[in-house]
Amino acid sequence: MAEEKEIQEGQEEKKGSKLKLLLIIVIALLIAAIVGFFVYTKFFHKEEEKSPSEKITKEIKSVEEKGVEVEAGTYIVNLADKDADRYIKVTIVLEVQDDKVKEEATQRMPQIKDTINTLLFTKTSTELKSPEGVEKLKEDIIRRVNAILPIGGVKNVYFTEFVIQTS
Image (cartoon, rainbow, N blue to C red):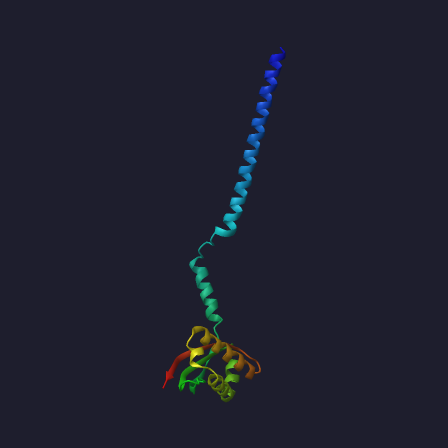
């Protein structure tokens, strides 16, 4: 009888340890699934494609945000290169916020042109041959023209013609 009790207790212990092991495996799988879901949604899940109507709405908003264009003229200026005589020919269009800024810019066009001419005189051909140099020139023009206009408002600068000539 004592042997039967020991056998039963041994079987119960085996069942209890198997149950504990099974419970640990289930909990580990559950945690792994939660972590996997979190990682997938945080790092790998791409946004769903927008519907055509949402794309059109976005395009309409970008057109509405477009400003008013002001012709700032064509400039032919000697560059600041010391090793050779070089010049630049550039035609500039300013994008301003609205018609009020356009009127102000038109009234102050002599000062704007002088500012742009003076800025171009300080540039070298090496600076202006790189895309970064051209972007810096645009930023400089925006900053200097906005300083002239009491209400500011220049949003962007467009070069409709940009030629660097060496002699």
